[in-house]
Image 1: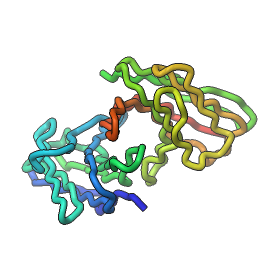
Image 2: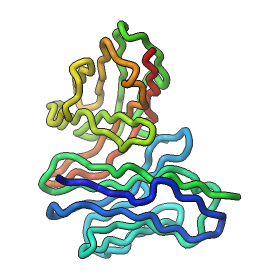
Image 3: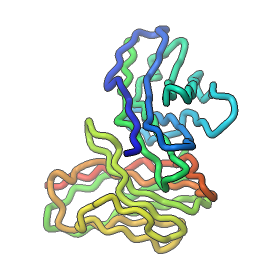
Image 4: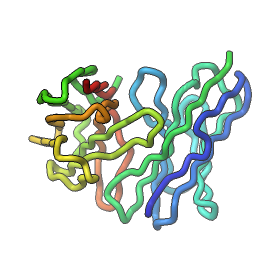
Length: 113
Length: 115
C-alpha cells in the first residue's frame, strides 16, 4: 500500500542547532513530494515541494529538502533552527497513479530558546 | 492569509444534534477535500471532490455526509456523532491537472467537540 513514514514523532532542539527530519515513502512510481508545516494555532501551510528537476529543493524560512530516489526519501533540513520554528511538520506524497495526497503522521518540533 | 475559509471555527454539539461545517475556497481550484486531524494520529483524508464530483470516500461512517454544490463550496453535514468524532476538521483545495495532484491549500479548521 502507498504510505509515508516520518520516523521522529517529537524532536527537541536548542536554538541554532541543525535540523533534519526524516521522511520515507513507499514505492509507487512517479511521485510529487511536499513538506507542510503547522504552527501552533495556525493552519497547515506548504513549506516546500518537489515535482521534478533539481532534487535539492529550497523552501521558505531557510528550509530545504533533498529527494533521494534510491532511498525513497525526502528529508527536511535547516542548518540553524530558531524558536519560531516550533511547529508540527508533515511530509506528504502524491503518486501519479493515485488521486489523493498521502500524509505522514507528523513530527512535532520543539525549540528551546 | 489563507484562500480557504472555514466556519464555524469551533463547534460543540451533542450526540443527537445535526450540524454542518462549511468551507469556501477563493483560489479558483477544481478539487476540494475534507480531512480529520486527531491528536497523535496521521491526518485522515475523508472525502475528495474533483470538479464537484465525489471521487474518494475513505470508508467514512454515514453520520458524516459531504456536499459540494459548486467548485468553491464544500459542506460536511454531521448527524448523531460519537464522542470519538471530536477532532479538528480541515478543508483543503487544490488545482488538479491531468495526472497531477498539486499542493493543497488548507483552511484553519473547525474544532469539533462531541459531548
